[in-house]
Image (cartoon, rainbow, N blue to C red; front, top):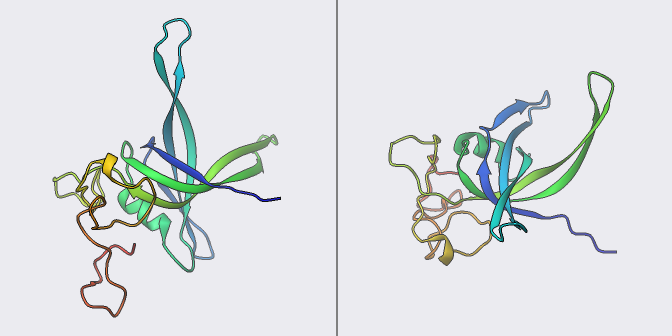
Length: 173
């Protein structure tokens, strides 16, 4: 039997990310995220937005992207993002001895959906390095690193290490 565990969300952070470090040297960034479900109100006939709140975890991986570091640097409460991830089911016992469970999303990738604010703040609200160059409707609906091919962001990927054009200050996407 085939299995698929993939989550794709567009929404806003409900709280600033919080970072935790492990004795092994790993890191996790936890944050809240909200998306809206549309539901027709039977009495008024109007469409109502019903928020759904999701807990997200981003880890630094030994090989590959350091998502926890990127989340801590660029994500702030209220910012809008496209997230891709997968579900995980967590179980634990509370301090009161009660069994607790939660369904959470483990972040695999994300994409900026808002322009950078021009207040000079890197990493503050809306402070991503990449500024939108086209409306969302012309951009493909997939998580990918910022791109410069008409529809992504106005700065290209940093060049691979050893290639010309890359610098140590580029974001490692």
